[in-house]
Length: 264
Image 1 (tube, rainbow, N blue to C red):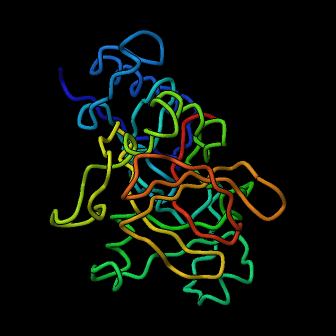
Image 2 (image 1 turned 90 degrees about the vertical axis):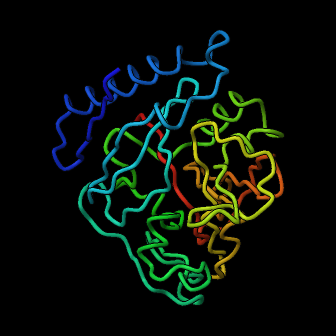
C-alpha cells in the first residue's frame, strides 16, 4: 500500500483540513492493523508503531507521530512547544529552584542537558520534550494543537483499561529503547515489561514542586487536566523497574511531560 502521510498545520487552521487529517489517520490505522477500536479480538492487538503513524504539527511547526489505541488517537512523542494555540508564549525560564517552586504562571522548562549526557538543551527537547507545570496544562489558551487536548483522568483510565489494567499497562506503554542502546531517548535498564503498544512512553523525568530535576531515564510522568483538590493535578507515572501504572496527585508547581489526545 502506498504510504499515506498528511501534515496538519495549526497555523492554517482550516477545519476541513483537520477533519481530513483525522480521517487519514483512522483509515491508515484500520488498514494496517486489521481492525480498530476496543471491540472484538482486533481491538486487543498492539498497533505497529512503524505503520500506524502520521504527522501532527503544532503551532510552532514541531511534528509528532500519532497512533490509534483502542478508540483513542494519541500523540506518540512528548510535547515540545512553548506557544499556545492563540500564538501567546508561556514562561520558559531558565528558572532556579526557588523561582520554579514559588508558583509561576504557565511555564515550561528543559531537563539540564549535562545531567543527561547530551550536548545541548535542543537535544534534550528533541529526545524527551519539555516539562510543563499544571498552569500551562490548564491554560485556556490551549496547550495542545487545534482539535487535541491534554487528557483527562477519564481519558487515561480508558487507555489503561484497554491495555489490561494498572498492573500491566505501564509496561505496554513504555518504549523498548533501553540502555545500553546508543543514543537518546532511552530507558535505564531493566525497563521491566516494556512492550511498546504504539504509545512510545519516554522517561523524560520530572521537575519537583520545589524545583529539583529528577529521574530522567527512570520515570515517565504525564499530566492529566483533571484537578485533585486545590493544590494538585492528577498524572500518570511509569517506572523503569515496574510494569504497573499509578495515579498519584502532585503539586501544581511540578513539571511533567505532556501527551495530547485527539478530541476537544
